[in-house]
Image (cartoon, rainbow, N blue to C red; front, top):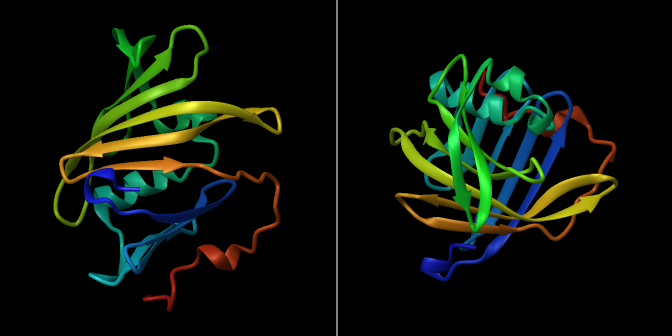
Length: 186
């Protein structure tokens, strides 16, 4: 949902190890799709059509599509530095600067008591240029022995979105063809 605009919709996210992802968002009478087969990444929406991601945008999307990235932070961010402490939604947090091989530093706020991610801040490359973001992770629940957030709130200069996860399924067979770019531009 985008609360400030009174817009709601649905989102389905499918991921497959090691680094394949597809996100389908149906909102405001339109469908937006974004995905990667692990090599190239693409997005398709009614306003811009189908396009391949390139440069920093491609590197950031591929990094964000690392399956279970929370357990592979050293792969995603070869250099990480503890930079201090903070409080996120009343919880004490340890702040880490996560430095990727390509792209901007991402600050990751870990709950001091549980070790779970509470917040991330940084900058993301888009076709319109870089935008800053703050992502908040809340309502962790255990599914198949894994703690996962069920509420994600992302704040950017353009809008605030809230994602409420209603269902998570693990180890479901997924055909690799699902992640291929529609129409294969190449």
